[in-house]
Length: 377
Image (tube, rainbow, N blue to C red; front, side, top):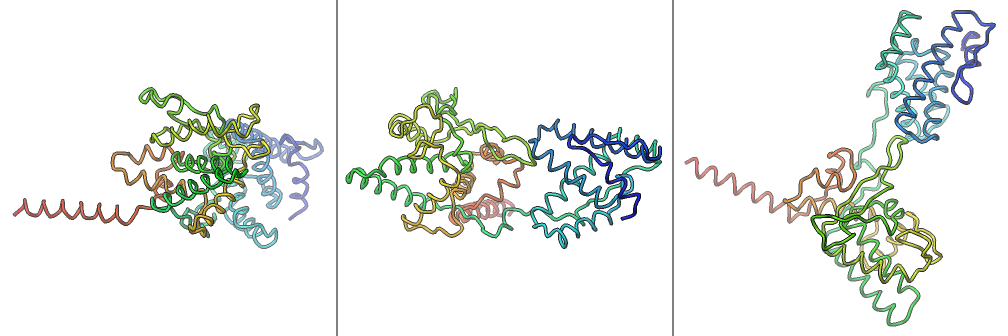
């Protein structure tokens, strides 16, 4: 890196991402610095407009500043070779993990898209430097996102028989705990309802952990369900530093309503701590954590004699999607909205159709084709 570049690096930004200008520098350099300041300010506003978390905004701006420092160049001078060199530096020198490097690359890619797509930034660069920012990131030099099937641990869906085995296990353990007047009685009751709700509403462990006793709404078309017509999920999975996504998951089963009503009226009061709104509490009165929900589920699977490898609470969500997908009266779009996926393709990756359903659908297709052939004769 040359001396001029090093001088520039001292003038990048302060903690608020506003330019610190050294008046002793040349006017040409001051122009570059002023343009750079305006770019950073505009992009910081863009990130705030998207309501990203402050920590995410800082991470984005820090990565951009680090790229600037590495190259010693301003955006109008950046090339794809600079991006390749920086990526190699993250991999070989900084020893960044794949996920970390991918995240930083994507931050730069979004920033570069902002530079190119912003008319104001483009005009600014053309006016002062007679050149536009160029695209330096593409699928050729970006680490691709992993899809569900590429995960090291391939999550499975439970069969309906396996789920029935799990519910039977809970019933037997609850009856035994009641007979022996065991302290585990209320915990087993809580766990059965909790995992039933995860399955019947397709929830994530974190979404379940953050549920409150007041997170239920009426469905005017099913007044008999009263306040259990749906669940308001307030802490859905966020993306790219955004706040948690909210969604309504509508109730589709009388069974889930019966269990929820029974739990809130009979089981939840056994835990006490009425000032805590959490739907599922630990015995100490704390909100049950996602980690505890997942760990306890593994223990229950083992005790029930069910497979544990590649199975977790998230597999109940896979099962929910798969079993709904076998219902021909439900549209894929409805299922997608129920589970809070942005793209239908993601929902399809969660779908594990049973062999019996596939055979039935295949036979239906063959039968329809045979009827067409017979009519054509």
